[in-house]
Image 1: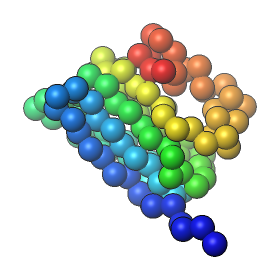
Image 2: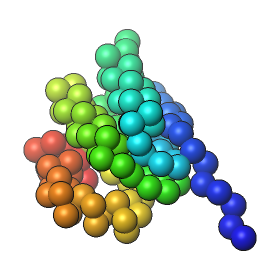
Image 3: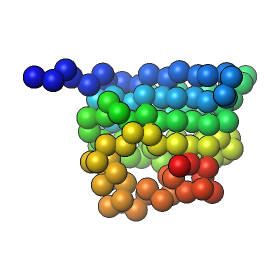
Amino acid sequence: MSAPHPTGVRPSADPRTATLTVRVGGELDDACGAELTAVVVAHLTGPAPPCAVRLDFRDLAGIEPLGLAALLMVRRHSSAARAVLHLDNRPPFLERLLRQTNVLEHLTAAGAGAE
């Protein structure tokens, strides 16, 4: 039996690279999405805002519609702050959802500063 995925939002900021990395684990639902958005906004509006925001989905177990809405809000705030948004370690189900809803390109567009 495999170990459960860590849940919640775990941010870490690297001042040397001006990068905020946020590991998202478990279900990206309304509660987790609200926490994710709040964490990113707090860092983007803080005294030393990051130039890059990396969302790491290696521990993501699922995503609900309000979780997808949270990703769009994170993109909106990152773009407004001129921070590059990266979506790292996307599991296949997330990749599929982002493609089916036609938001993958929006979230990862060069104009949005994402990979």
